[in-house]
Image (cartoon, one colour):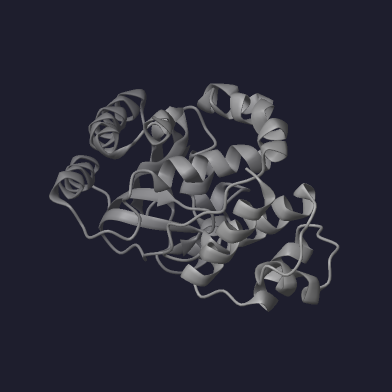
Length: 268
């Protein structure tokens, strides 16, 4: 990617999303950029050339801002950046099995990307998921059951039966712990569990005492959410119960697999 083309595409992307030079510069500066705002403005107006490293830092800044918008435009990086990123792309291509080769930040980026590839965030309720959560609540005799998707900052409930609130902050969510497990997370009594006894969801609404969750996966094996059951009374949970929850989770997983798109689909 030559510098002039990259410069033009940066301007196109910024204009398409209605970004102003000041917010671009603030993001750029936060990424370690060293140029003044007036220099960034001159670059965007085509009056100043920048070294490849600064162009790529600016491209990263614009792309990060665009992640929070509805724009589908993204700024490509220079050939220099592509060469530098080749090892990282190879590691990321391994999916969740190669997570140990990634930094925590890289692994989280891949996990969230796998979630967003499902296109299920902030979509209406669907019977294919609701039928599973209803079965789970009835089978275990609990107050609530959900299919939860864990975004970067929140828990979104694709399906919910029972008194559980939507868009819980991720750091408060029991499911945020579940997605770090290879298997289920069982909390027999949250008030007796050091991890959760002071959680606002335990001390206040919906007063969770019992929780059992099973991880659900998206493309390339990344864990993106859970099927869980919740109750306001502590209870035991046997090996047979775990097996029954697993079967319900497998049903939810089959539905997720219909939506998950592997990375290579976008690169073909």
